[in-house]
Image 1: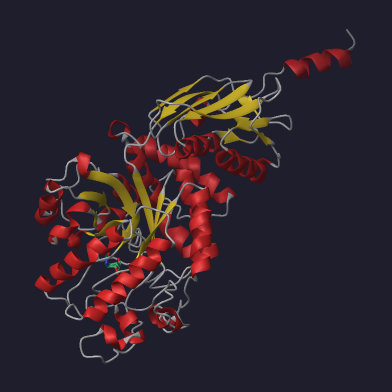
Image 2 (image 1 turned 90 degrees about the vertical axis):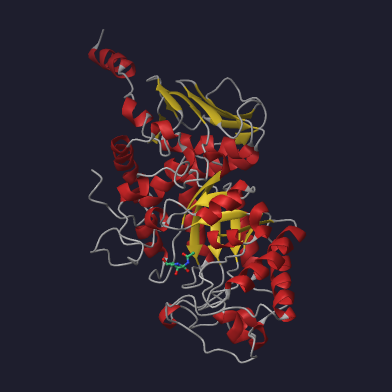
Length: 495
Ligand code: IFG
């Protein structure tokens, strides 16, 4: 056999490199089960995405095109014998999915489109170049609510910045994005019935230190809601009240009890403002805002804030919540509020966002005993505006320093005494923007700690293991680099 033929035979027979078996197990959040096979699938220009769920197929095709340059067709019909990625809906998988990758095909099966989308996020993490690591993954979320939060009030983040953030959080199977849209400094969402809220409260200069003004028009909000929904992320809008309302009262003095507009505030103090609890104007305002927000929010939740109402007498606070929480239900939504709303019996049918640093909250436990459910956001674990360490240039320190391991080493299912796992909807990482001015600041503070919170929200408690997580995180770092994400290279991780 002539040399060239011999060489050809040798090249054709050369074993195609098998992705590291570890690579198969590097998925974040950790799947319920992952069994590598070594039979990797190789994407090529003949690969077809076959699905009757185009919302998922088209997003996967867009991601594969962006990451490999391959433009894979998406078709509902049975693809030719060629190599295909099939995305199928079938019963019995709950909120989860099953992923099988072998040499000739990739198959993702789920019972819901969101589950199918989650399976494709895992698929994308198994890709190295044009190879997808071979094996079988069976997976499902521990909690249904895996949230992240952005504070557009202290510093307005533009729609493009929010979209870039959504691009990253959905890869970690985060499925809710809570937007903090009003506070003492500024008002960030157009409300037709009260135009001065944004004309004045959303003007330039209405952010902390006079930086970061701006607001979302209803059209921009609707566009963000649609962008998020295409990535199976649900937007949760927050209007904080009865405290944190100085911007609204600057715009509408009739929202104060004395009718005198307070001065605009660009400092970072909290707890000094309160709606006028005894005035009917207050409840007309609140109902108008809730009605307009509910009409443009497809998601189930309207967040009504409720934190740090230090300028509202306790009895007035309870009276306010007893009148306002039912308004959320009137417009077809479920009320969601910081854990202080648990003081009000009307809150028992709503969701409390626990931001306390204690392991017990008797008032909340009492409300949970009456049916209230909880999202865990303990400030000393999940507030990603806290510095990593003393040298972190951005962020605050009041809840303590939070390095990656601090964000990872806790359990939302057992965090609060008297709050059983069955009452816990999930977790949410908060990212307040007193010190964050742009998407780079957001990414630097959110990543890698959000990956830890995402794993606590998705993965089984039994798979909680810091050494395994930090190893998977090190393997994930290059994905953030490839996508231009300005993450913090924590010294706790061997990047
Ligand atoms: N607490 C305030 C936020 C923000 C935060 C900064 C809550 C619920 C401190 N309320 O967290 O408005 O100022 O870390």
